[in-house]
Amino acid sequence: MSSIIKINIADKIANLAAPAVIVRGNSGYMVEFTFDSEWDELQNRIAVFNYRRYGASLCQKVEFTGSRCSIPTMYWDTSMVDIGVMVEGVISSTTVRIYCDQSALDGDANEVDIGTDGSLTAKNGASAYELAVSNGYTGTVQEWLESLKGEDGESGHTPVKGVDYWTTNDKEEIISAVLGSLPNGDEVSY
Image (cartoon, rainbow, N blue to C red; front, top):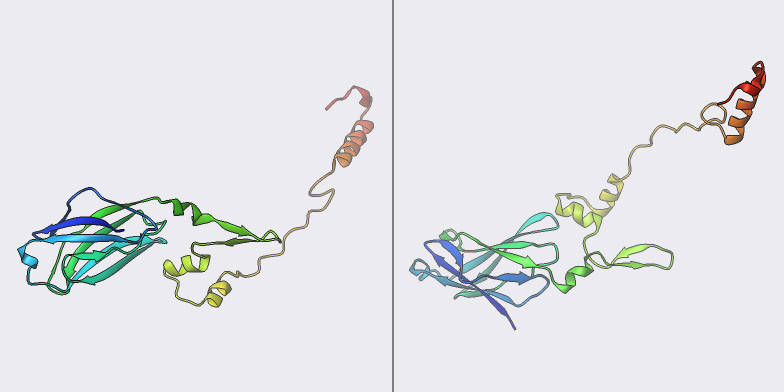
């Protein structure tokens, strides 16, 4: 079963024929374009789908003839897709924005397996390396891992008892010593 989203193209302006939404994680969506006469002789059409995934802007182009084509599946991190149509080097339309709604599959986005040793392994979603690549990193996994290692820092300071800190017993001994050295230390309080 497919859901059909209808888009009218007139004077290169795209408009939705009726309100539409895409439920993420589902295939089977189709777009059906209704073209004005300007498009009559142009049969090698390309539907253009612009959206964001893992923080990166993506563009998928689907070639078709006639008036219908499939819409790529939108996933859990895609909130909207802009759809337009073109004929390479000849004509293009504006886009319409279709919002993508949450599906039952969206709940799996952060699901992890807990190993017997307590380790966590993501069941799906991008790894840190995949996120780095989607944000422009071009090196290998090994190069990326090496890039995470920083230079050695300065040696830390080890606190010294009696200089940097005192225990409760130390404090009590100091107070007793001070009070004992005062004349008539019984009358002094702290």
